[in-house]
Image (cartoon, rainbow, N blue to C red):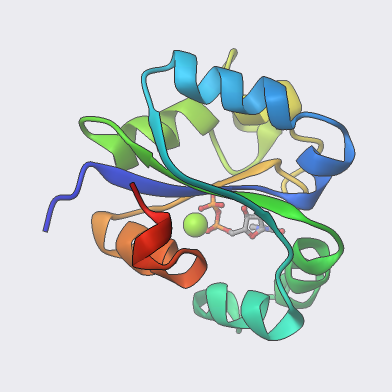
Length: 139
Ligand code: UDP
Ligand code: MG
């Protein structure tokens, strides 16, 4: 089902560095409507489940540590072609390879601490949104 919605997290490094406002501004001025939003912190079990697809990768342990070390901003975003357009807006996983003007180019420090998450498919956007938000928190 094409939903025109995607899911994002402003990761702990973005919150720690005071980038919440700047990144949300970039997202909304790029045409995305915020339909769910919260400051929250994932438990180890949450992060292990969220990133279960990466459980065999060498960076999995560090990824879980990073994503649980402080609060994140979780959000669901709406726009035509939301998943693909948001991946374009955030840029490559490695900020060193991210295009000029992308969120990761502007705000990410490294491939590990890369500022933001963006869903990679409509199916995962729905799963990830439901992971963080009840139906009553989605508008
Ligand atoms: N990651 C990492 N090292 C890598 C690849 C990924 O630490 O070599 C982390 C990084 O935080 C990334 C997350 O794991 O955002 C999920 O990886 P994925 O390949 O799904 O990248 P994304 O979809 O976030 O661009
Ligand atoms: Mg991914």
